[in-house]
Image (cartoon, rainbow, N blue to C red):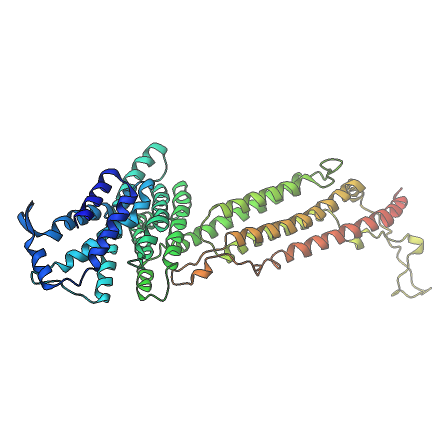
Length: 495
């Protein structure tokens, strides 16, 4: 026993890990020595001392005289174990072992007649409760430090403190799950769940007033909500990583009240989508009006308008995914449907200047005109029909539709189809990477991870655009054929 005290005292002074290991080994030998004779117990009880404490002088047995200091020192370390630097993390297991063994030995000294024997279940429950107390105490202390640091840092960096706090709390949770809770799990299997659920509750208490005031996207909202959502998903994953067969794990899951970030964001995201789609459609109409249908270069034979339209679409899609907020597929589908409507409008406007092929067929000359419903009647005076002529303004209008301009229109539509396929593939890939995590903590952990299977719904979103573009291409081809066949032939009659 004296050897144990010397080893532990030297460890406290020097920080040498090997001394702690030897000290805990010696303490375990004391803990396993429960077969003392009655004479030995009487002798051990006779070795006592008086210690001056806050409550006055306290009578201690020989065992208590060196175990109490070991337990007090270990308790002080473990009640704020987050203060331990990384280089001391290797000593955590030894310190926990020393604290737990000392607690058991001191519990056996609780009466004056002999050793108090408790069942194995009772000892395990007491150990688990002690570990829970350590975790709760240290988490609360670490969180309070992070809260103070976040407030100070927000003033210096002009960032919202809740965003900074979310990032710091995530660091605490990850460090806890990596270094400390795997050790604590030897005595309490719910260590990770205790830590994560407590951090979730503490941060939620700070976040709630902010969420109550959220009504639209702002700089603070787009800064805080993604950080809070990432933190919540991290903490949920930690809780769900614990063995679900343990009944206590279900208590921690049910005790985690979701932040409801998805429900708060959903209407704001839809309003943003509707606003962006409206802007894109306005831009399409303006771009068509300004388009001269001249090729961009000798290599790029399409118009400038379709390039700009896709640039705006890609920027809008980037903004959508960069929100980094919990979303559902109907929201993405709403945005892509807006793109589909804008591209259909573009396709329709490309051919709006063209006319139907029937209008291009010129009237027959007067001498060859014949109507089937008019019978030859020599006794009827025939009215001379107006031969009509092709409208000169229309003639001038069509003369502006040169072969090169019609080809630019066709190339622009072809470019639209190529980029449409790229847009669909890009949207699908990015959606799979950022698949929405579960919206409630009761869902199974497997639903958090992204599925490798294709996402349903993408293949039909742009059907309207494909149909409109193919129809526009056919109309240009028909127009070109009749225009340069029949129209040029008819123009000879005009001249």
